[in-house]
Image (cartoon, rainbow, N blue to C red; front, side, top):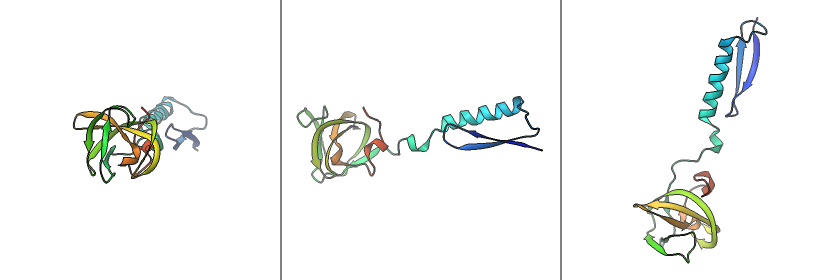
Length: 137
């Protein structure tokens, strides 16, 4: 009595469409499929979206300098105390640093109090790898 078709939408879900007559592909079914595909595209794949929030805290016990560039050799813009909340904008590679989070060559571009600069990723507690909360710069 019904024809069943499985349609895969962009977010990876499969939608089952039942049509009242075998082989019937009228405008109503086409409209439903288009709407489902659009909704899937808008929703996106949850695994590809950044985790929220992008706000993290300085975990380095003595705090950390906010640098103009992703390097400890660049000018210091400010000193950020332990526990301060910053917003991670993106991340990039730079010189290796050692800190609270171990050793890494990843630097986070951050924003705090109207300033934008870089801190070593090892100085902040992102709770996940930084690529989960921010794109590369």
